[in-house]
Amino acid sequence: MNAIVAWKAGSASDAGLARGINEDRVLVDDQNGVFAVIDGLGGHAAGEMAAETAAASIREQKYDATVDPERFIRTAITDANNRVYDLAKTNADWSGMACVLTLAVLREEELTVGHVGDTRLYLVWNGTLRKITSDHSPVGELEDGGQLTEEEAMRHPRRNEVFRDVGSRLREPDDKGFIEIKRLPCKPDAALLLCTDGLTDVLPSPQITEIIDRYDGDVDAVAHQLVAAANQAGGTDNISLIFIAGPEFLGAHSATLTETRTRHAVTRPRRRRLPWRSIWGSVFWLVVGFVLGILLWSQIARLRWHI
Image 1: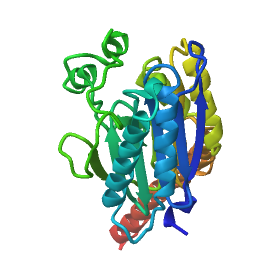
Image 2: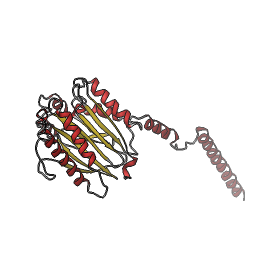
Image 3: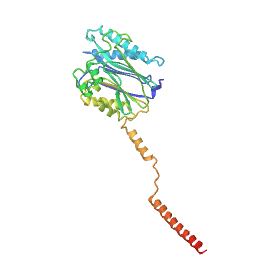
């Protein structure tokens, strides 16, 4: 059993409001720390077939903790790519089908991510939502380069174009310009969000963060709340995501965290203050002592003078 078993993963996938077919797929293997979101590309049923084929291929690549995560990811994505390509040649309706995907392996406190296209992985840590993957698209490059704001990119007419995909041609695991790999530490008080563009095309980062901030131990609730919010914002595409919370992660506005802060404030030791009555009492006795001292000194002086 993998050491990440203490992490919790919740997922949700929905066709959205504008499409009758869900061409997304999610893969959750929390026992081995393998997670993927896949978004199909192509007309008719081609996108759905491409995503399903890629998901099945990745599932068959059983992850072994003795294997380097990057090598596993490169092999799994490449096998999925070539299977989609070969299958497309067997049916004219599937010609040109492909998909985009993000595949993550979480082992102990290290995350390895393999990425092709415009699906995304976010890291949630220390109150901040940070995009780890880069969108392999013209609009994504402009946004990542700071030439477009997030809101401008969301409204851009070319936002759904990609220049990397899984399945349009045969590939090798180490092909340049194919799989983007990233490694990063992942603390127990962090969380991860993998998602398709059906979420990020309609929900800006602050709104995603607001929902995650309410996390209070129920990962499935966060996943379904994000899907519901995306549908409420228009639901223009399929929406799929995986929310993974570390064993020490709590949303910034969770009821548990609020209660803990309140309890801490109540039980925090206070500096002991001297009551005013005690202060005035001390002053009184100092004055009495001073007066008695003067009287005693006068008596002694008088006796010496008589002698």
